[in-house]
Image (cartoon, rainbow, N blue to C red; front, side, top):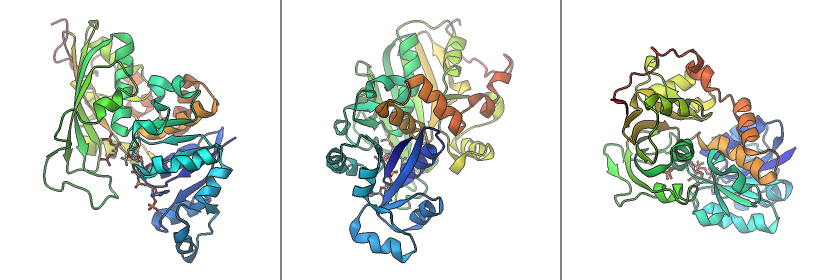
Length: 361
Ligand SMILES: NC(=O)C1=CN([C@@H]2O[C@H](COP(=O)(O)OP(=O)(O)OC[C@H]3O[C@@H](n4cnc5c(N)ncnc54)[C@H](OP(=O)(O)O)[C@@H]3O)[C@@H](O)[C@H]2O)C=CC1
Ligand SMILES: O=C(OP(=O)(O)O)[C@H](O)COP(=O)(O)O
């Protein structure tokens, strides 16, 4: 059993902890956080050993009845691998602590790519992390783009990708984030950081990205245009390629899912923990082919899509399983089952989204 320490127990950390707990080959050694708040109480109630990230605040935990298991330093010493899910920039400050204990670590996408030897996506470059001590799971948007681009890159080749990212303003617990009544170019300069970040996974890929922020906490939405090198054999060829991917959910027209709100409602109806959607959600009707130009729209649940990637990164760093085996086990244990979620195997030709434009036209 690999002992996993989670340093930083917020939006990402608490989800990764629950996902690690669901695996048969790893266990949560403990979780570290700074503030003795409702999330700390939740961790203790979930029977995770709680460690204080900041020793000065240790008494605050005791005052609310949480018996601390130690400090972050102790957690690192007692773990085989650390998942660092602290806020952007803190991970890089923590790296010397992991080096001191000779403990491999996984960082998150808010860190600069230089924090680790490899920027990781389980679908695109699992094997590159197998010899690494430090890996960075790329951000939620970059994870969504990497999963989407990998099969296109392998099957047709990519001449150029252009993506407009409509980014959620903040997560539901980020009460101070915005905008609350605006649509804001973010960043106003082009490209946004996402294109260069995708290139940390696909170094040769030609990609430009533009970002905007909008007043929602639900999900990010991407409008994608990819100019392929080779002609697909019609739009159904592309649809079938996406359907064969384990973490790409093609939303069928009959589902009536017309936005991020219905997607979240759908996830909660499906019994997903915290309403989490670990998969990219591609609107089937939006998949459009004009010659070699592929268009479509996808939604990315920012709180969730990196969670299975962290589990897979743990296996890559520790050599537990290879990429396909790890993805398959992670999918099975978390319940990533697209057929069950959207009735994929029941789709008839008539039920499939109508082709608006096809290369055959
Ligand atoms: N939220 C998102 O949508 C996504 C975030 N990411 C990336 O994941 C990382 C974490 O983000 P997120 O989960 O949103 O962050 P949160 O702010 O939700 O959680 C951060 C956690 O780290 C703790 N923390 C703060 N400072 C320290 C410290 N010095 N040492 C140890 N722990 C500390 C916080 O403790 P406390 O709360 O007790 O103060 C909190 O538990 C970032 O790199 C981010 O860019 C990636 C994909 C999506
Ligand atoms: O990793 C994320 O987004 P990103 O891919 O836009 O960097 C998370 O949604 C965090 O984004 P934030 O930097 O807007 O909090």
